[in-house]
Image 1 (tube, rainbow, N blue to C red):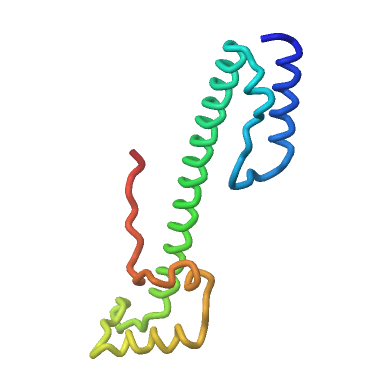
Image 2 (image 1 turned 90 degrees about the vertical axis):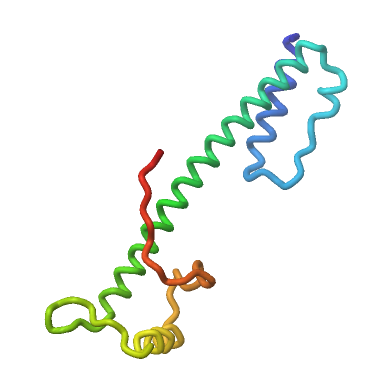
Length: 134
């Protein structure tokens, strides 16, 4: 790869990175690609594959973080609901008789709206299941 190709390539990459969040459609540097030598194209290919692999790793880390945060939020919601349940004399939560607990829950849901109601609007309010990382 010649010095001019290296400088041109570095400028193109710097321009792409400085544009901020990636747009939906990225235009390849056609002038560079059409005039580049085989070695330059191989270097460009390897750099793009490396960048793609790094993005995949970042996405996996973000997905893990997102799952952890949602799990913590669901646990907090479940704990709040458990504390709101009436308790019996022996300190255990009283079972819902004839669906009274469900109707009270629906009434509370209509009265107040929480952040997790927006995120988990279509999910049932069951306790979270924790799994060990593999």
